[in-house]
Length: 199
Image 1 (tube, one colour):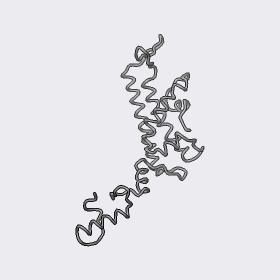
Image 2: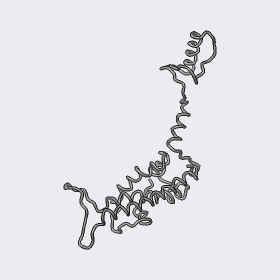
Image 3: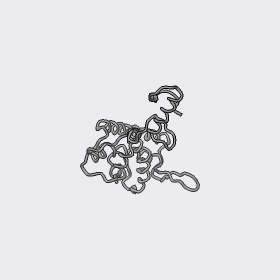
Image 4: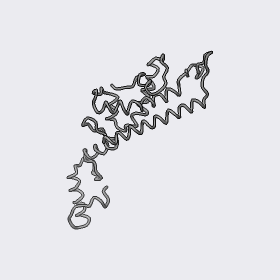
């Protein structure tokens, strides 16, 4: 399973050296679910990266290290930044203070968050451009978008615009419609499925 670590955060953002790595776990998971998966727009690609082991030095690994990691770090850090120093208690949400420092203002927190969100969006744009450049193919494996996967499944299952009755095959439906056509109009020929009442 591929993921990002505290060491990855340190490459891109300011993170306290003594912060337990476990404090980042929920933000890493949330960013994967709410940022990474929608950006990929591909269940197959998401599972290949998040749910399986990536082969070292593969094309997918290179894509992960160069494009996914920075986007994932900033997506997770933005969520961390918004809640860092805040505890949810029975009496409400509390911020930590100590005698040697004071918390930044809400305005300053918003400015920092906006700056990091802008960086996150730049890395997201780079990720999407690389997906397009690679035609969503890594190591001879294609990772289509959700829309492409749905279209492929529809075509593979023979979905079309012909409406057939319950428990009837297409051939049986053709015979039934042609019989009705002959009965009602008095001459043969197949029904044009682009016109007429199909019910």
